[in-house]
Image (cartoon, rainbow, N blue to C red; front, side, top):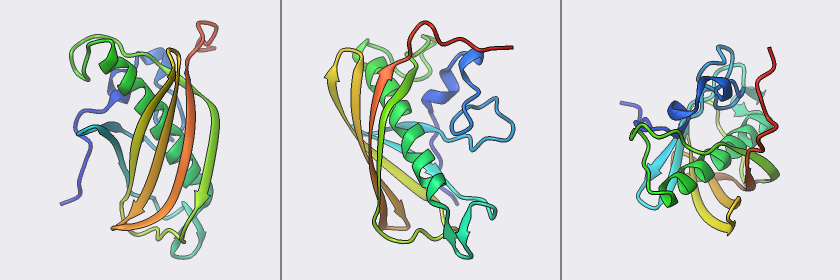
Length: 161
């Protein structure tokens, strides 16, 4: 049985901000990445689809970068939500983050026929800015690592109709 994230921060984002191609639950064509807690670390599990290949048998690097990106912003939202005294599912809308910077290092070729597990470690660097270090595993093999600096989404971000 495939492992899943049961309580994901993305499930709590208001509809107006749930459209991200990577993690938006309302984007019918998106990846639907879901990020939750596992102890003091964060976790996103995603199985690439057949069209996410670079060459047959291996995942396209852009998908891995997208996974690290959305995992990072979701992890920052989890961390600030918890710092504010809340947990996923408590009925309180979590903060929403955007990416200030994204760094990705590809360590090994990533097979496309297994679930990818992104594991994040979070560090607050400012009340509105967080750094998330992420490692991406296929089975138990480290395939990529990345760093996201995420900032609280500015009030000027709104959904355009």
